[in-house]
Amino acid sequence: MSIISFSHVTKKYPGDVVALADLTLAVNEGELVFLTGPSGAGKSTLLKLVAGIERPTGGVLLVSGQDMRKLNRTTLPFLRRKLGLILQQHRLLQDRNVLDNVMLPLVVTGASPQESRQRAMVALERVGLDAKALAAPMSLSGGEQQRVSIARAIVHKPRIILADEPTANLDRASAKGVIDMLHTFNSAGVTCIISTHDERLLQGADRVFELARGKVAAVHDAESEVGA
Image (tube, rainbow, N blue to C red; front, top):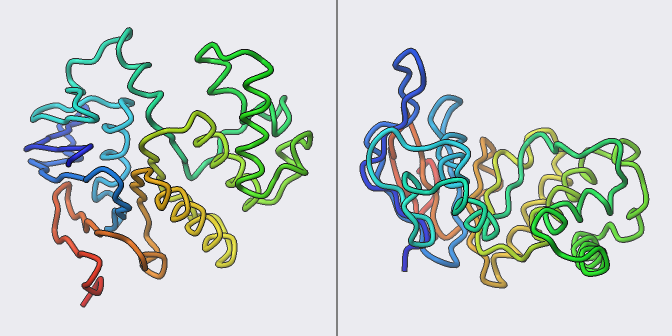
């Protein structure tokens, strides 16, 4: 069953810049899929549309059965509670410690301070950073900061994780650690969509969507070799 469905979706930016052009694809619930392709292929735009950060210019995009063109300020926050977003830039608040950063999604949704703190500590434990809960984000390595952003993305138990180039600024070992964590969450039933330039990280995906010029150029399943 599709949890995300693009049907002839187009996205244009001012100046008639086409980011997505008549894009059709579907992601099934519980899948782990990668988005690949050169810069400008449309990977980040696709993820922003799923997250509701951007809206389609044309076509139909359904996320958990919701038409993304019809969501408003009242209904969009409810959908976003089902999403966990991991960005290349961690966007951690430097005036708060690691624990406070991870608690933020729960605080925003009205959870009590006690519940927020407990669930944030569980999330940090899952990414191996519970011992750094009171540390300042800037005192952590790049890989550790990305793990904090993963903890923040999973603290509210999302159904879907969207990761936009989550390993771009990491060394090989840290990058593999991040991908291994996403595989672990996927094995628990979370749908994961990950954009990456690094084809070495694609092993274990259910499918790989290769984008070019805002369209799906190829789809590789779990049995095929990317680039073959």
